[in-house]
Length: 213
Image (cartoon, rainbow, N blue to C red; front, side, top):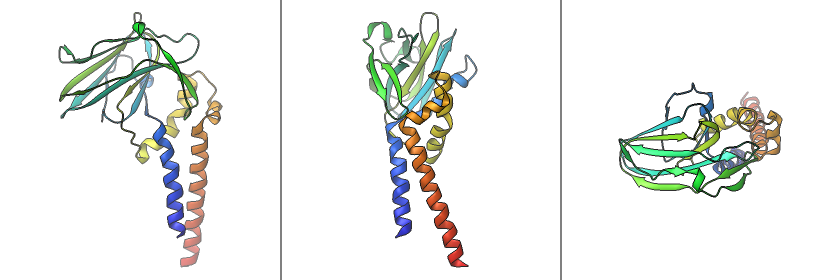
């Protein structure tokens, strides 16, 4: 009975992550490196900072899939909204060019990370198997953005650990905030809850060991 209760506690802890994308810190990669997108239907957020060169992503798909694309920028002073996203299959444009200069950007607050963004309308389309290249750029290739790919909310253990790992750096580098601002977001509640669940499991394990002895 106790084990079942502990498992339920852990389950509710993990459910909370369904409100976020799997984060990918592209700005840590060497400039000019092509980012390979694995599992393109899984909900992922690629955080990039253009520094004089466009960012290139690539999807190699063996089967047809739902290609979902969205782009947001941090809602902060100096943020650019003139980004262009081109999606190409071979030499053919699979999507119409998405040009941020022609969209009305809207503000939204993401409660999980506690961050404010500007977003443009998302686009999605069932596409066939093949190699897809996605470029993110603007006239002088400067500025911060987050490219969202995929819609399936899936969070295996390694992705949950990765969220805890990258959030402080995301706050400091991408949002230019002190690392302790993470305590103003919902992720802190999940971290605290995970710690509590972990302590309960450890205490139960110790008690079980003593009981066996």
